[in-house]
Length: 135
Image (cartoon, rainbow, N blue to C red; front, top):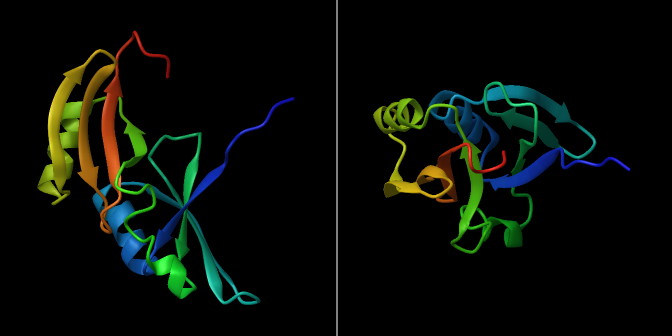
């Protein structure tokens, strides 16, 4: 049996502001942006450049109870992990682009890591795994 997780839904306030952040600030690729008239919503998928794994489905909150989870999808814990082949290149570029880092870079047994917030406050690890850690 072979299975895989294809998308992770990320609840957002607005499609266009989320696309702007992920595409223009984080440099993700916009994979799909399709309007679904029958549900009056868009199917918006973004992914890191060169990625062939899981992508993010940007899902606009459509019910009042969903709005409470915008920016807090993991209850204050780091929610997503963005692995890179060059930590310092991406860290420096992200700082120049105004990405807010809430924990500074640290060298850990598994690699280099820093924690940043997305436009809504969800926490992410930016990390470069070392050769000791399976990718």
